[in-house]
Length: 367
Image (cartoon, rainbow, N blue to C red; front, side, top):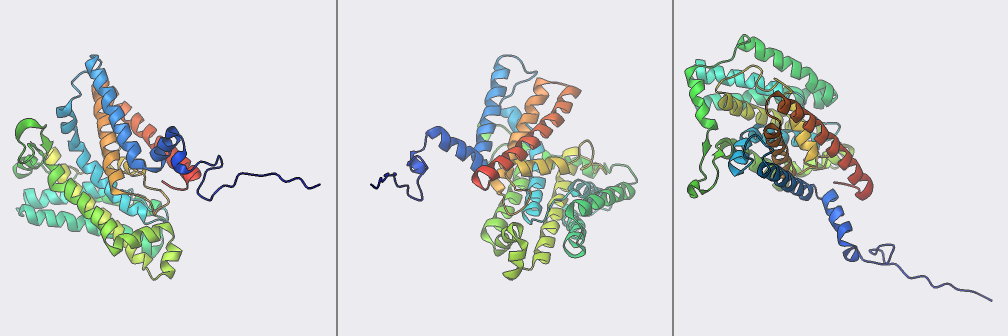
């Protein structure tokens, strides 16, 4: 006698329980969306932070009002952080351990040179701005040559240039900030303004959002999504050997991203001069510096540290999340304690982002 057992057939697209992906529980689909769509997760986290801080504000647990005006004023620190996060996005996307630890010292060196040109040498603002871009690009080119053509690991190369550029900033400035009257008047470039054609119904927004950050976001987005350079960058970040065999010049493209990182750092230098009303030789290296927060923003924004994966929208949202977390901490813990807890929060956010990237890669095969 032959005994046959009928088994329910399962189509290739169905789950083991015979349900199609659309038939899975809502919670499972929501969890997958949160883990695989970093933009969705960041948007949810931003809403949670705003709600929690608003509740604490209503309960009188904060030293000040966490309202729309305060959140808008906090965006002044988002301008340099987001721009350097975009610089890290470009570098990390290129793969092979791409990273740029020197962005903070490039900001310091370029801010001093910009301050001297505009505030002491009598150059026009446009000429000094072009000089800042060129100096930043040259610094980035040094990194690019060391990484792409000499073959140094990016971590070692950019750590070495971090110390070199930081030292040059101190030497060029004679360890003193440049704060001539012209530079002090340049503070107006960092003032908050009313949104055009809207009037006073919305909070004042820092001018740097429109003059520096938005143009940088647009240019980087276009480069990555609408040009052959962007496609080449994703290709070599995913597998540079395959990219080489497909005819992509890996060395020149990888060097280009370091030059772009330097150019963005040069623009950030101009932003910091406006914000501080002074060209400081430690503008990008004081405290915990600018390099580590920018890397944290990139990782939190969904940029795979191995390269080939990352989106501009993730950088923007992760910057908003960190800026508003820091702003809330300062209200919850006034004084020096707030500053120290900001560093703790930054470290916890980086650990969270790294764990999340690992879980997503193991469970779903990507970010």
